Amino acid sequence: MGAFIVRRLLNYVVLVFIATSLAYLGAATAFHPKDQYLQKNPPTPAVVMYHELDERNGNPDKPVLERYGKWVDGVAHGDFGKTWQLDSVKKHFSISVWVTVRLVTVAAVLSAILGVLIGSFQAVRQYKFSDHSITFASYLIFAMPVFVLAPFLKLIAVQVNKAVGGDKPLLQYQGEIDPNATGFFGQLFSRADHLLLPTISLSLGLIAFYSRYQRGTMLDVMGSDFLRTARAKGLRKGQAILKHGVRTAVIPVMTLVTYSTITTFAGAIITERVFGWNGLGAWFTDSTRHSDVNSVAMITLFSAVLVLIAGMLSDVITAMLDPRVRL
Image 1 (cartoon, rainbow, N blue to C red):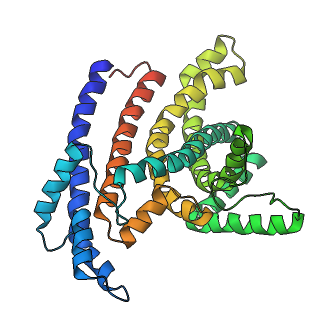
Image 2 (image 1 turned 120 degrees about the horizontal axis):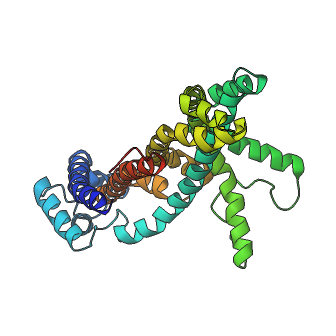
Image 3 (image 1 turned 90 degrees about the vertical axis):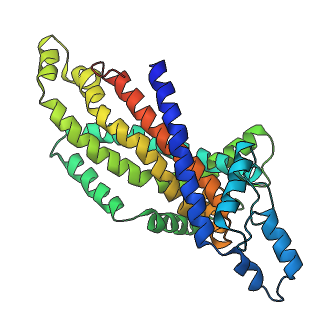
């Protein structure tokens, strides 16, 4: 296991470098940071403009490969450059990443657990009213992508707060925390309150997706020989399903979970904008709007690392769940 992980990590270093380099070169070629200064009214003085562009390593008058070489040298020494606001990219990332990770982690864990449980329940109750009802709800959720679901949830929260009234809103739909929250538990409850709606907007689609997949794999397992053997040895139906059926059926779902967690970051871009969270999603959209090559490269680096880690975790989790698999 240890040798496998080391080999994978060495390969990942090369892949991450290639992916991030392509992102930097593509952004540096496509973006035109000079236009951000020329479009201002009154226009920025040329001396100031070129000074700030050089600070950002984004002067378009210099060759792209020269700027790329300077960026690679900086990254090798732990310097990821400066943002369009001339702040440290590394400092900005260290603040934004935990906002998004907190949101995505809660949504990923919740959706994986509920998706597996709901899908298993549907398989056991195949063609019953509950199975049909959950299937209908799943397809309804599939028809509502994040950019529709998030504003819809926010609209519901506004209407609920109006109906309930009171000094404090029942459902929080803006920001990460109440600025007036004091004390450890006060801030903790405030963060949990503000986390509710964004988590729902990210989780519902994943729950529907996982449950449909888990239902299919569970139906295949329920007719298997090893499950009938477990029943013949004296296990009750529920025990056999939980001990042997769910564990076997969840193996292919775990691969989806690890990779889908990464794609959840894409959904977080919209969710963060709708609910006023200042995470990687908001930072990425601001960076592209202001032609910030360094920030785009940093976010791409982080995404590439996550994708490759997801692949490794998928293999490790599969080996843990299925003793027939050896790494």
